[in-house]
Image (cartoon, rainbow, N blue to C red; front, side, top):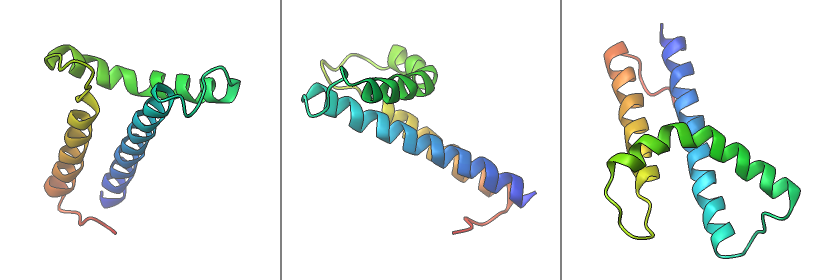
Length: 97
């Protein structure tokens, strides 16, 4: 059972990193550090958007608008950490690290 819990925890951590990369990449695009005219940059950004938007979209609809600040990735990361810790707690498996 612990191996399944660790697999789920690893998938959650992978999704955490995808969200983080998507946030950093969006900042780099906004500040013109990288350009979406580059095909590779566009493909990576599009992939990250398609992977993270199904989870971030509903959170964005619930959160109030704060101007140009998007707090939905922070909320999602906190939820992912909570779910990861909750799954490990109910399964009585340690962190494994």
